[in-house]
Each structure stands twice: as C-alpha cells, then as structure tokens.
Amino acid sequence: MVFDPATLNRAARVLRAVSPELPADAALRRELAAQRALSGAAKQAVVRAVFAYFRWRSWLDARESEQRQLDAALTLQRRFETRPESFKPETLAARAVPVWLHEEMDVPAATLRLWQQEPPLWLRARPGTAAALARELGHCRAPADLPTLAQPWSALCYEGVTDLYRTEAFQRGAFEIQDLASQWVGHVCAARASETWWDACAGEGGKTLHLADLMENKGLLWASDRSLRRLETLRQRCARAGRFNVRTARWEGGERLPTRTRFDGVLVDAPCSGVGTWQRNPHARWTTQPEDVAELAQVQARLLRHAATAVKPGGRLVYAVCTLTRRETVGVADDFTATHPDFVPEVVLPGKPAGLVTLWPHEWRSNGMAVAAWRRR
Ligand SMILES: C[S@@+](CC[C@H](N)C(=O)[O-])C[C@H]1O[C@@H](n2cnc3c(N)ncnc32)[C@H](O)[C@@H]1O
Image (tube, rainbow, N blue to C red):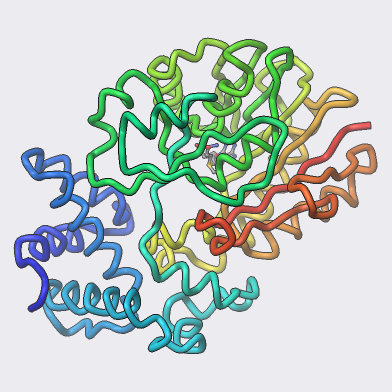
C-alpha cells in the first residue's frame, strides 16, 4: 500500500460505521471526536481518504479490504490531480455519479471534473472584518472575480490545516464556516437593518446568521424550521455570534404560519436532494434516490406557496435550493411564477435575466445552488 497505514485504518473504521442511519460525514465526526489527540493534519488525512473512497467508489474492487480500496481511491485521487486528462469525460459521466442523475439534469463536464476534486473550505467573516481575520488565521485567500452586489462579500477561502472550530477567532464568533454559494443566497436577500425578515427553513441557522449580520443585528428576523433540535443549535450559534435580533419558532410547512407578521422579505431555503453538495459530500451520490427528487419538488412547492402569504405587498420572496435537478429548480420556480401573478420575478445575479439562476459548482468552486426571487406587487 502507498498511503499511511494508520490513516487507512482510521478511515476503514469510519467506512464500517457508515449505515443508512449514519452518513459518512456524521461517522467521520464521531470517529474524529473520539481521537482528540490527533493533529489537524492527521484528521484531515482521514477525511480525505474517506471522501476519496466515495468519489472513486465505482472504480474500486469491492472484494478487496477497506484499507486496499481506500489506498486505491487515494491513488486515483492523486492521478486525477496530476493528470486530469487521463480521465475521459464519458468515463466520469458514467461512473462518478449514479445513472439516474442524467435523467434529472444535464451534467456539465466541468462540474463532473470539479466533483472529483477536494472541495475548498469557505468562511464568512463578520461584515467588514475579512482582511483582519485573514491576517489572524493565516492561510486565507479572498476569492477573485465575484460579482459586485448591494452589500460587500466577506468571504475567505481557508487553505490551512488547523481545526478552525478550536481557534480563538471561532470561539468569539468572528466567522462562520459557510459555502460561497450559500453566502450568495444571503446577498440575494440583501436584508437591511430597518426590515423584517423570515427565514422559513432556517435549520441550524447558516443563512439566518448571514441575514442577521446584513441587518447589523437590528430589525426583526424570524427563524423557523420543523426540527426543534436544529433550532436549538441555531440559538446557540446566534449567542456565539452575538446576534440578538432573531426569534425562533417551529413551522412544519403548513398553511398555519408561526406568526401573523407580514415581512419585507421571506427566504425559503428549502429541503432538497442536495445534488449541488456532491463535491463536499460524495457519499450522498450513492444514497440519494431518484424518488427523492419528485417527492422533494412537491414539498418545495408547498413550502413556497405557504411562505409566500407572509410577504407584504412590495416585499420580496427568495427561493433557494442546493440542488441542480430541473424539477426542484426551474420546475418549482416556473410553476410558482405561473400560479402567482402578483409575484414578479427579479434579477438574482447581475448580468443574468430575471428568474431562477443556477450557479454551477465549477463557476465559483462552490456548492451548486439555484436561486429565484420575486417582488410582490
Ligand atoms: C436546506 S436546509 C436549511 C439550511 C439552512 N437554511 C442553513 O442555511 O443552514 C432545509 C431545512 O428545511 C427543514 N425542513 C424540512 N422539511 C420541512 C418542512 N416541511 N417544514 C419546515 N422545514 C422543513 C429541514 O429541517 C432543514 O433544516
């Protein structure tokens, strides 16, 4: 074997722990939490091995031991990094993703290539502090060529090996770990201090925190989700970040809304098949099912329809999904536009026409994301 046996053994333990109830990222977190003495670099090596396994799984011989398969996957990863042209586009299309995906979307060859690489780690500094944070953490790079938006980006790409959750900067709430495409969603909302917003599918609060930052910790921001556990994490994150303009409430997506408030803006960051995250989370390529896509498209349409009733006349509705399938993106957005003549589609990315925009992973080296926005007449 070519790679460090201790890393391969740890990664093999993670593979054996993976089950329908415990996806690879959760199994990794559990294994690494149990190995507190490991250095940041050693932990990163385990993460790399496990994700390489799922990225190259169709190339591996399942009859071999986990260690041998992991070693072969890392060897393929190295070959891809040094000689990408040795993998033909047709081979990647056939083996890097499940066959059903091609029924649901046209997969750009450049996206497939990106999905076979290791993902960058994106941070979002508190507004106006990105340069100072970059100096403090080191190994940070500001992304180039991002569009100019109403409020400035505070994104950084972190290229070091330190466990960022253990840094003093993280503990005092100086930044969030947040993908660049998710940061774009916050910028599409462009929430302001004087406004009222509702983050209807707030989850653990990644976008809530961005909205709270853009609103300068003022205004009123409701955050809801059907998961009380996620809302509890959201509250803890708000406390760490010192954000106090957020109110939480449970909402399961029904007609009955958590409040009678009518909002300047409503964000529906809907549950989705997550295809856009397949670089960061390659295990999901093999667990997501085509039936999920059809089912989720119905859930998304329902959430959007109900959440839209909370938008004030003149207010805005933003729909976001970290997936790329036609049904969950243009399918849902076009249907909403056709059935809601009082909601007028808006431009969400400078230079693109009004209506849903798909951000392909290779464009910004980010998750894939689809976003649409409307203004209520
Ligand atoms: C894409 S995630 C949200 C991510 C979050 N906005 C962030 O930026 O961190 C979608 C969320 O929708 C929630 N959800 C799923 N079905 C729902 C439903 N029927 N009603 C309300 N929320 C739902 C999930 O619990 C999940 O937290």
